Length: 221
Ligand SMILES: Nc1ncnc2c1ncn2[C@@H]1O[C@H](COP(=O)(O)OP(=O)(O)OP(=O)(O)O)[C@@H](O)[C@H]1O
Image (cartoon, rainbow, N blue to C red; front, side, top):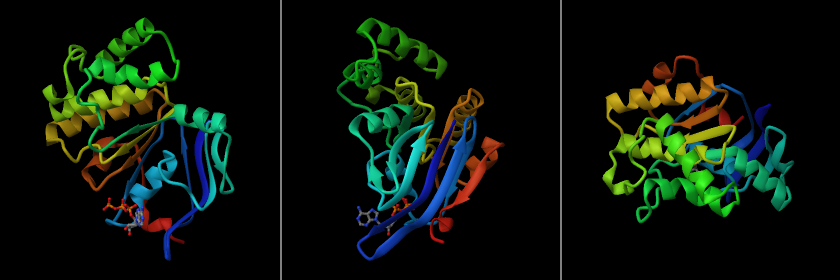
């Protein structure tokens, strides 16, 4: 079971940002994408998370296809793909008016992924696992940067994805917290999660130990 992005191209007007690019990620593998500003890292992440369309190419995760040869699949197939794919945003995108627990339960509740009771217990368990066991009733504004990051990861994990994408996961964190978040990401990979990280932080590469580095300059043949 793998993530496969095959022969993907993307242009904005005349500007070709990604040209016939392919990338695959196996279970338990961590891939870090490094590269110059403006080289297409965010565009790649957005296409993988269906926030931007590809021009051509295919994207598949564990047999669920988002797009095949530039053809977007049925709504049901895309939903299946999106449930397997988790995204942790750079600025965490937590809803400030909701508690931590409500933030975690929102998407799975509206997708019918369980009763309120089941999801609350799952949220508690995940928050414990992520090292923020006592923050269920806190609002995001009451959390530190590192705690927000952990809550954002727990929220993405609620849908039981098989792959997690991180957009600049360490940009807002101090050195000590970066190390802790790196440990957490490594433990997710050890449990079989596929991990894709877009970052400017070359220090993350050594913290991850076993990692494959992709340069965004390779996006263009
Ligand atoms: N919606 C859009 N419309 C037009 N051009 C875009 C759009 N999104 C991105 N671009 C262009 O595509 C190129 C790649 O942008 P992208 O944000 O993917 O780069 P990046 O590698 O993530 O940069 P950074 O490291 O600064 O975040 C840039 O030249 C950008 O201006």
